[in-house]
Image: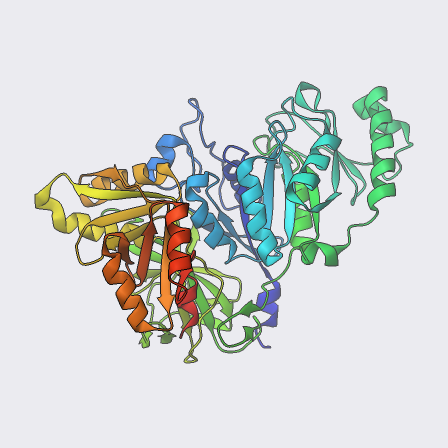
Length: 531
């Protein structure tokens, strides 16, 4: 219990959304409030030469999209916030899904112009699986978008979650005049392109005052009064326990690029967001207040600095206290490891830390000891569960274009697939390398990074596979027979587990009914259970 104070100071959350909804821009504004950066960079703009702090890979700057989750820590009003900015593009969804296992709550960004989009639905399903508390930020109110109440209704219907407005917008698009904060009873007036320090807040505890008409005009004042009356009547006070149970999502309106409405959300976030929570393991649930240290690896990033060939493993601390230079037990390898340079992050900038507590995300230099899902403890043997590896949907064979660089290619493939954005399969009994991904853009990223970071050039040939299934059986003889008969469709993943590559749904169903003794799994989670 001695770490209680430290734990209560921490909030760990991810920002998720469809691409281009304004996630990375919002991240920048948060860092601005935390005093972590002086000027916020735009993700893409021809005029602005400063790129977003959280996009640190060369390819991200070229494309103006995020392709890897980046981790940032900053302090705001004595609360230590660990923020994970995730890629919105669906081709990198797996990285995002895994990041969601390492956070305690989520901020979902919805674009007021486009409303709920496909990727938002999928991300929300993952939050539903774990009952993660969600706050919704409706962005781009300074553009002509959908009606505010239509938007709320659409989000409720599409994402199957009850909403609770915390601020209400006054108009939108070029007529956007600001938002009224229902909790603090004040009016925030909008002026485009103002700095974060400008104070445009007017306290209006009683909306019947003529001050409101002076500030926003008679017509808009009347509409706002009606809106507030309606919302107060329907919603009342925010039930914080329902938010923490993942049943109700507070909603804020604003414009991230203009730094508008962000502070209100951040203030509410530190007031209601959950502190680090207990987590399930293969033996029992571990509370964050437990004295002994434990944590798991949810992400690996190779070549953060291409000159040094370094790999960084991201560790989420779940209980106890992590200390620099102290030996911890690596459960999968059954050996003790220690770290002389553990880091906290501010995107590219790293600071060596002496200690970390539950809720913190720590970067560990890795020479190849870690895989995603690995657990570190102070001696006890267990695994943190629920860190999935999904079945890929697109399969391509790797063809080496430069035989002199075979070694570099193999090393690059191993290290990049260790990051978990793609999966590497080796054909059973041969050495044909097949990469499985969720989306096409990942192949471009892999090809680009192999060339830039390892000097290996390759091309990809599409393979006619529909799904990869991990296969297990209680009868080793039956499994052996099946792999012999189907050797053309059998591969091993990089942990040596057997995988069946099905050409179509029909083939997969036929094999399942013909081989009742063999189990087909769509995620590799199964292998984490058996310690």
